Length: 462
Image (cartoon, rainbow, N blue to C red):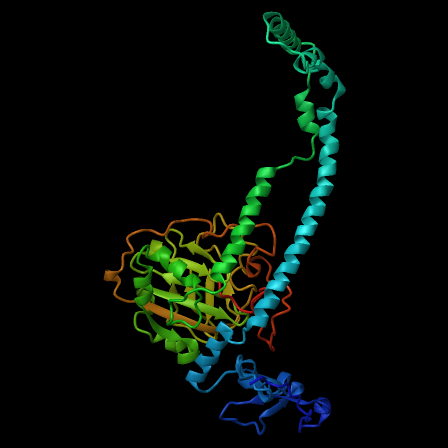
């Protein structure tokens, strides 16, 4: 049944003192135990002021009364672990996608592409006029044209009454010999160095054709990968790109490797008490995969290969990039002496540092993992799109039954994974290079920015 939008009457906050006066109720606080507070219904002033510590437990009343439970609760923290995991799953997999969303998404793409193609055409026509003015100086040089003039030979070749006779061929061959003798004398001098020095424009057709093929390939990638099969069903964070990481870790046996992963920690299930991680047996002395999701929906992680350290990998799922560990660097460290004022997890000796509070975490990509060959716009922001980030959720998987997995091959060190870069933001992964692209399809909520994609509100991958 089609939902009908209902607008609430606008009930004003019961706390009508000071700045609350005239403020309408917008939020419902769903935490079972209210603690010391006496109310559950908040206006903006309550939400941002006195009761801001309860923001994570609030849902959007307008969405709730309209029956949009996914929108109402997708950023809400529940007391129930099951509900928390469910809405986190909902948040990451976008059940509110529909055919109209796809139509709007493609219309937006078409509009942007056609606009860019028009700009491309105008720019090329502008450049061709400059290009032609330059090459005319030497292509249409009268001195050169006269030097290579072949009037006598031309007359003989255009003679309609030419007869195949010895005399006619003798005359034709004589004209040919005279012409060759003429163009091989030293009377004409051409200053090629000056021509090259003065030329400002060069028409590179090969470059155009290469970019053209890359654009077509990117469109095919959209067809094949916008909806993709997903085999890592244990994770509510990892997207299908994790399978590409598994291919690098365990070539030709990636499915077996994925099946060998055993979930040992999920923040939305086991809580955000740093001591929980400290109490996991042998956490830093076994092979693990850690997947981290920030509040602004960046997803990245680390494969810590304790048994063969040089195979450890840091990966960024939104940007579909991975980085191998440097020699003599530690991929993962657990601080068993941590407290609320110190760091808890350290990946790559500084590439990712998770604090014990899971807030204001930092990154300095390239400290322990190799970034040579990559274009990194900002080492501190590349993974999370900000210098300080809070953890929304985190999963840790232990690798089980490793003796059954073929990991004798080293991951191939490349600068990218089958991901040709095109100098056009419409075809580049937008969350990769430009996190501030305006997205008309996103519906960001308070303090929870959506992933920065011009088409999809969350990453399905690339």
